[in-house]
Picture 1 (cartoon, helix red, strand yellow):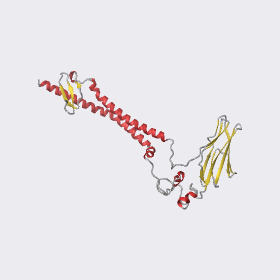
Picture 2 (spheres, helix red, strand yellow):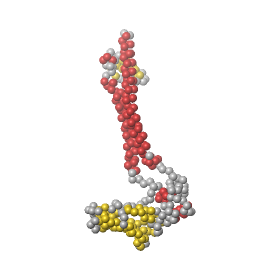
Picture 3 (spheres, one colour):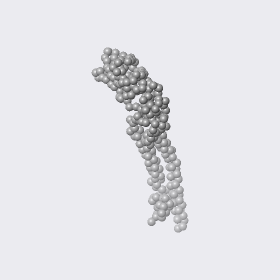
Picture 4 (cartoon, one colour):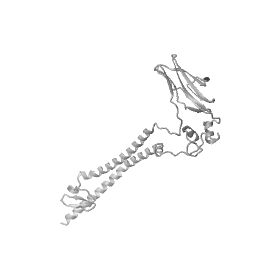
Length: 289
């Protein structure tokens, strides 16, 4: 039975010496340990560093996967649902395109109309022609690829876009928005303000219930601006600050790599001390003969 916590050293003379923490090894000629002992510390240190590098790399990989999984997510407090851009084909090479607009806009809000995503593979688009209809009546005409417009009159607006190419080909598409009242031009419909605040004194940038979401964000999501909403989940918070997690993981990897030489020196020093102690004990045993 080996003493608790002791390992066994076998010397070249055949004597068995017990030392704390020693492994079962054979002490070779001239008191030098065999090559497997001299390199064992390197294997131990290398294995430790590789394990920690694997943990750090795994952490970075998990964060990256979470970010990838959430790349198409939608924060309910940051916008409204918009119907997709409307595209129309004239043959297969000419496409008229209107960038997405909200389904509902307030009549105090400037909206951007954009047709620059329209394409023609066999030439150029020379002319853009916009028509704005309210209740079947033509109200506005524009001839620019992009511009801003305020839907001052309430109701359902139909917007048509016709593009003409350099070789006289045309394509037409359309979309629609509903204009609601906003007399104070704060981007919040008046009916919504009156419904929740009994007045139109609140602003879009205000936070009536103090939950960290503005009145405009509450309106966009359809939540009650007078009732505090729950905070963000742990996962949402981690995703928001993912770059800190990546930085911490990278710092851990760098620290492990930099500490490798120090650990190696300490391991070598410990093995050297054990070998020297074994040699001294062997000498003492020889002198006692």
